[in-house]
Length: 166
Image (tube, rainbow, N blue to C red; front, side):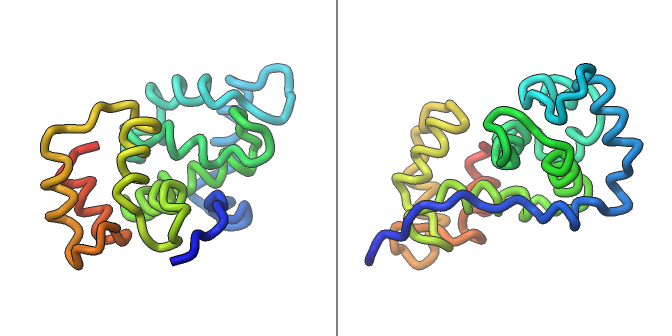
């Protein structure tokens, strides 16, 4: 099997993010708090601290919120523009848990689009989540890998996440 060139997943289109659920007043409120100098972008770290105390963090899967946030920083690493923030909020408010895990799956599984190899999952757990592998990792992986090909589909990955409790 040939290796595909890595490409980062694309966050939802800014037009889709400007849904009724993400009002301009919500964005204005966040930007007044976190961008007092009106630079046009806010630091991800400050926004993450902010959302752990406010909406919409509670609507996103807590332990994946920071990782997902990083996937939305397209213009400047470590900073969110207004449209990137709107796309993130839209995912948290309107997206399903599968949508959120789908972004992680797409980012981590770059070797074979549509699949996540065992070693990619290990890197995801150790590097992105900064966790030591649990002793039952292999058993859980094998249990979720329904066709026993050493790779997980998105459905198998979501099953893995539920059992492994990332």
